[in-house]
Image (cartoon, rainbow, N blue to C red; front, top):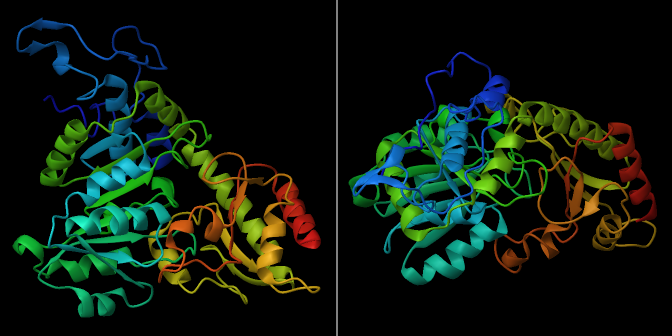
Length: 410
């Protein structure tokens, strides 16, 4: 199987800034025609020169496709990795990575993760003998890991910022603690970081010591709520070879048009993340000012009554705070906080009530009843009055006005 999932052509300059890489990595002009928008190879198979001699290494589209290879080169460049892989969804990427843990081995998972991740570990992998331990890694993560790391530990899996409580974990501190630990198979545990909320523009986990970073590319990378896709990046050749084998063997690969849509979205990722962050900062500040709001969670809140408890971590490892906010309204005017949260979600005008995040449009949801319903009645249960906002790129004045009018009616 030809290796098409690498850092990319020699034309890429490693000194380029991330905004420049986002525009050009994986999107080099077509070698045949010079088209600056590369073609979509919408094909299931490829003609071979002779038996055992595939043209350019291309054989069958499940194994590899030129459009997918461009996306894989793009995410590798953006994350500063040697290798990238693309999957049919973020969940498919999650499952492939989790498959590195075998029966009788264990994975330590940060205790605020996407509900689908929890569902995979608890309702699919636990039956196979894989044990997941959920722990709060905020604060002194190294000290917490000291109590949990054992000879069966194969992997440490974290989200930072987390979904939906926006917890931050010191990735470098976790990586350093794992350096000296001998876990399952007599090896150092693999450190996996879900970087969906931050995007590579906001944070690069591999630079902080992670072995694998991955994204639901459906979200910020694609950025337009029009495709489902997942990607990962790693510089460890052994991990890449295994995951590339799984990608082909299991076949949970994205179609070329979906890869094209993610690539097209990535070209404006730098601009969008700046605008998402600027708008979210305005919305978070407006929420903090309201006396009928109990709490606001946003990595960009550095001071005041709702200052993020891990602001110092954010300053060290994040370039941008991103566009995700969570908040809880207070009991008010005879209505409970949960009732007000539900009314808020159903009263906004610009913020569409919908699952997902990271698109140009603003979205609102109630995690306990929507994206995180699978963790209900578990130690990872989400507060019932928690509202999650994905702040889009609309004018900030309109977004603040929408949040204000919805809270006034809640």
